Image (cartoon, helix red, strand yellow):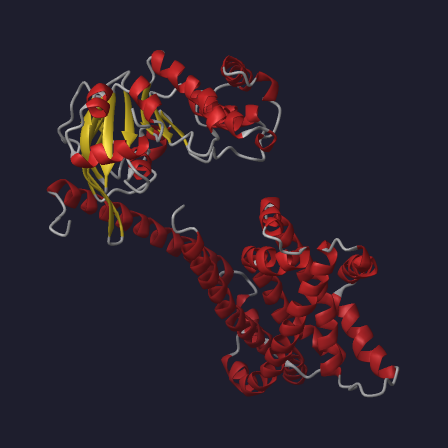
Length: 253
Length: 282
């Protein structure tokens, strides 16, 4: 299994990925490769498999076929230590999933301290630096429920970034936010993208995807129907399905 | 999509998964056998083991006492089943009284608090004594005087207080947003409690509830203190006549046999609820 052919230059490569729940095939023969510093945006309607794909990448789902390689090593091998892989991949969820019993600061230092063995003072210093960079320093000692949705999602982003992950997975992180809060979250992602963090992002924000993505994948019924640079996908999509989808989500020009 | 067949790679992965599973089954088996052999050896090697066998593990005494214990255990089961129904009803009423907000219900709320505080503080066996010997002495008209009746009442009183607290913790664990959305639909507080909050609360407290019911099953043996000739009393009777304690273990086996199906039922119920409600999130 370890001899699976992988693209040596890719940070992440997926080939022939299949995932089904019972009879329902959620991902079907999905292939994707992500180079270092790339920002890949997954677009497509709800239920097209974007979230499931991200969950598979983080080994939260047991896959039914295909190969996922990360940093030149197959991680879909059952013998791989999933915790070791996840400790290098950050993930942010649509519903924030902050731990309500911990303060924002403790949320951010939990993994660095318990998983990476960082000393408390160092972990807090790093977390505070990130929190203040994203305008959350005054909320560090508060519990998540005291924060607005946008603040919570920014805190969740900081939590994911505190461990300096090699790859960041963002699962529709603005879908639960009202429009005026979307900007404050996306500006963080934009800054991270500019700083060279490799990301795979499932999103409904087309303007954002067009702006930050180096590559856009359109998913339809569990397959990547079309992928390419945003300029191509958004201006001259090849597939009829892609055109229909974009016509529905993009404001008429 | 139906023409898919697993790739060579996937078949290999399944073989690996199978190997890993086999490995953990083997480890589990080996560890289990090892631990039980060591413990078993340690017990049977103890100096008093032969005498213990004579007094507690006598096959003939087990056989002799079995029919009587079998007959008597039905009394425990009957007591448990009757008590359980009343406990569930009373406990829910007490819990709902405690979370009520209405000004009219203040006396009820106070009574509920006092009730749980006082009753939970009294050892159950004391309640059994007081009920079984005290209540008949009052010579109340229309109420039976049988020890079985009053021992059951004592259990209902005692366990209602515990179970009420279990229900209340369940009710309070339901997120306030659920109250808000029920009230936003125009439901009264009572309706919100009845149709939205309590159903969710009950689901959450099934495991601790089961805990209390297993405890209740065993505490039916306390009725022996009130002179009810149930399983424990029967086996004590046998032991005192025959100088052999094996019947106690027979009774213990019966109690275990009663609780296991209850535990499995509870596991099955919770698993079904999780499957139904968390299907997308798991």
